[in-house]
Image (cartoon, rainbow, N blue to C red):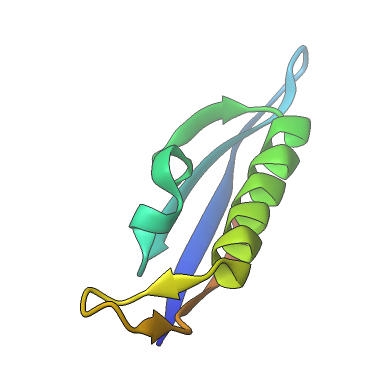
Length: 90
């Protein structure tokens, strides 16, 4: 089974001192795969937003390549795909 997760990163404001500010969160299937990464991450600068995306993609890769079994004890080839959904201020 292939699960579809969405990674949302939304630009919230641009500040003269702090620069561009972002908020990130996840939605969709297999949120348990991502643990605390699935929760809302507020007040990120662009470097933190990029690091957040990299961490989500890394976790998806790790889960996709790990050996998994079903609740019946049979091998599972389940995967999770991450769709990146950016939103920027105009």
